[in-house]
Image 1 (cartoon, rainbow, N blue to C red):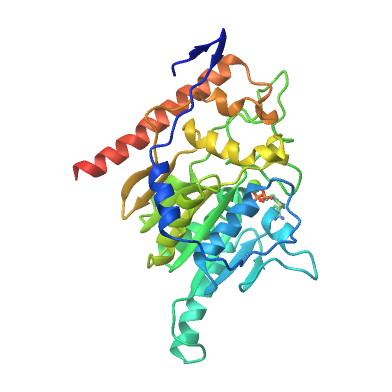
Image 2: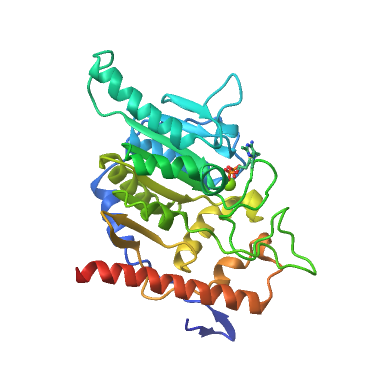
Amino acid sequence: MEQEKNGGKERTPKIKPIDTVRDLKHIRAKRWPEEELFVSGHRACQGCAEALAVRYVLKALGPDTVIANATGCIEIFSSPLPTTSWAVPWIHVAFENAAAVGSGLESGLKVLMRKGRIPKKQIKAVAMAGDGGTADIGIQALSGAFERGHDMIYFCFDNEAYMNTGIQRSSSTPFGAMTTTSPPGRMSQGQMTWKKNMTAIAAAHGIPYAATACSSYPYDLYEKVKKAQATVGPSYIHILSVCPTGWRIPPDQAIRYGRLAVETGFFPLYEVEGGRYRITIDFPELRPVSDYLQGQGRFRHLTPEIIAKIQERIKEEYSSLKAKVGAENIT
Ligand SMILES: Cc1ncc(C[n+]2csc(CCOP(=O)(O)OP(=O)(O)O)c2C)c(N)n1
Ligand SMILES: [Mg+2]
């Protein structure tokens, strides 16, 4: 990226996301429902972008929703007995079976409607879990639910580690990140494996809708949830959930880091609809990844060589994503 000289100081020019204008039009055209279905009073950490994402997701889904939620930060901060933040039916389930319970909910609702026990209308079955509950512990049940074709949305809230238990690495933790089980030192530079690409794994099941989202782009997120809700069959939405506590950033920077993740190509926002790829928020040029890594305590120890390696990987992955979008245009 070009650096501008500014009174002797180097400054990175701000890149305007291409879709911001479209996003703003959407804001003006449609008002979001005022009703809150994930209500205040929960005990999320200050600046938790995951809590914000859940709130947006529920605004988009509306009240005709039943949720199976695996253990994880969301479940823990939203349901300390005898209180709850959930204004929709919500079931706390084990790590392994969020998708299995979600698919059971869908089947159960169908039977109740057939027997006339509840009115016939669209009630969406939803399963949700963290990155550990999705990419590590619950992936088997998730794959099964996709393969059986349940009419269900699965949300992965990805804060990139096992956060509620004290910041242990998961297979979704990015390369180089410091966690309590991937500490940097003489023998390692933090997490030594690359982030598992769960959205690609979900899309590889041939499900009708898969997407990435982030609460720093609320209108993009809202539209994707609406699309998933209208989809008949399984949908998967992978939401990058900035975690100030685990990422070691100031709580008031959560939205900014979500934007930087997208603007640097670290976490591209895209969707795969009926096998067709579309980047929903794209840029004429990506920011250097160092803009995203710097300031995050979990990446503080990274050497310029490791940062260059991460930059190279992002370039490769972004090009391969673009190629998939291009391939879709040819057909
Ligand atoms: C089967 C099983 N394995 C491991 C654990 C221990 N455990 C509790 S919370 C947790 C991590 C959850 O991580 P994630 O799903 O990313 O949720 P987060 O806390 O980050 O929201 C683990 C491994 C468990 N409770 N059950
Ligand atoms: Mg997690």
